[in-house]
Length: 316
Image 1: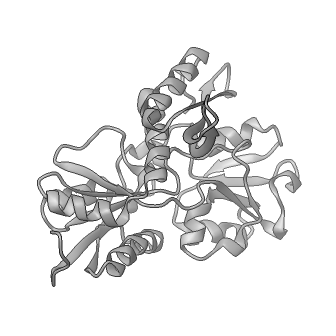
Image 2: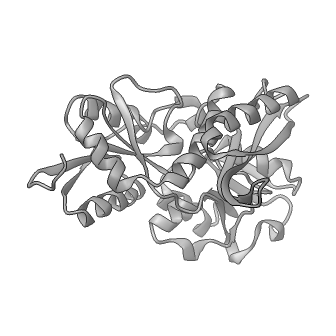
């Protein structure tokens, strides 16, 4: 598949407004390269359940999409990379990782308040155990509660006064053109994002090598791929799923080697929330730097450091 043809590429996606929007960024890259595309919405178990994400398990937003790809109903599948299980799926190849949106978490609060301005006792909602544990660890006296629902539903909880604030991924607000609603973008020193947050994974069938090469050449963003490789290696080593209270953020940064030459390395920080006596949690932190070629090993090394600190008993 070296030349553009009249073939229409079928792109599998979840049907939510956010998923369609982010899949549209991949479609736009392919259209710019001269390809015809069609977005094919696929319903997933995660979309059909109202249970907390921690209860319905890893892969609930991706399994149906992957099956549609394996069955030949779509040519490629686009996922929020943070939703993918860390174990490889037989028959499926990760063809590309698109350029990442801002990976940080964001606060949307009543009256334009920042996190530090919310009075003690304010009710803050989030669907992520990772965010819940890190918010509670800040010691601000907030009432942090679990919520489910799409972005519209979550924003409505603040607008109606049901909640004082919500915390969610900044990338989702950006992709649905709601950045103006953010009252504070949270510093990763306060709130470390989920591994691969803000990145999209584009998968193809392993037996469709031409398609894999096409998607890689048009969509793949190498600095993002390197960063999320490190982050997901940490998640895999901790044997934690996408809903676990684990955060990781890596960046490709410029550095100087021993001879004074400018080179690129990967800088990464990771956190894990571990259960202690009663309902309290302790946030474990680690950070390190490595060569770009050692991104995966960096993630493993940081995970081992967290395990040495006690991350084996992750808070749930």
